[in-house]
Length: 408
Image (tube, rainbow, N blue to C red):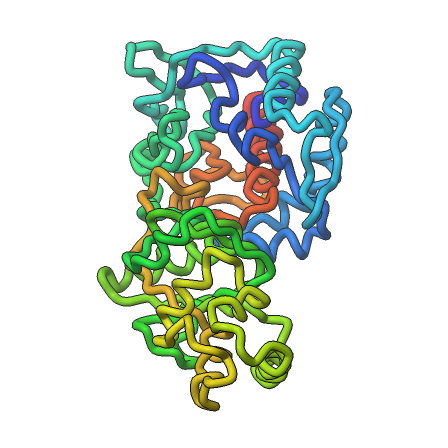
């Protein structure tokens, strides 16, 4: 996007591509469908970018989600809006997005150099950017350089954190990277036993140090989640993971407790009435059979084990306190968490170049003239739903236009 914006403005542009083909990471986004943006109002976009979203106001004002949608449709990529205002190509093919970007660069005569990434920035006599040098010794003289190297996740795509070293060499402060959207790890045996089970419309709460108090509440959200062989995942968990990763950075080894409300639409009193009605309707049913009305099949035995009750007991023999305990467990199923999956497994990186050192309208460095830094290389990160790609496209577009002004 930065290359296209600069070339459209009349600049001569060279794109150094680390891989042997363009858009290797872009092609796997949205599970291969590429969630190019989100169609929600801009204020909502900002709210869904907890990592310095306000820094993007100027970029979004100049090139917002509607502009991104128009951009791709003008390049011959028809789009559609799905649940949650997520925007995808009608073809459901991320490759169509990368192909369209590549074709536009070719039309604009952008010079693309493959298997090349900047290993060193070159500075002129005034301390500004004079170009870049690759590992093979290739030197590119330039009056403006845009660093768009991404974060440190999905490293097999080439996103290995190269940009942090380059930004630091130019004098920038780099906040150590952490995963922002990543599954969470649990050693609870029952969790692994439920691997593959997906829960919809549940509420997830995270509590610091295992203390279930308002003061220790770290995160609360609603949505879908998934049990895995190593812990928990899914959209709801990924959104919660940003706060969890930050907590463990500050308190490594500390306990984090997740409570899952399996019936968030029902208050405890309403759930009690529901349970009593089920018991009255079939008083001699065994507990594990009765719970089939309330729980997925694969969760029933682990749930009973956590309750400490005998699953073969007729439900009409359950004491009042035992029935109350079942309701409590339905509203707060506990999962002990010990950490995140590795940084490389994160969808997005939190951390990166300190945004206070970047001009928000142009993404120009405040420290090094001629240098621009965009996308995930900055300390900017959002939830799933197209927010991160919107941030990448908006920042790239702004930097491309501003860099062209420098050289023209």
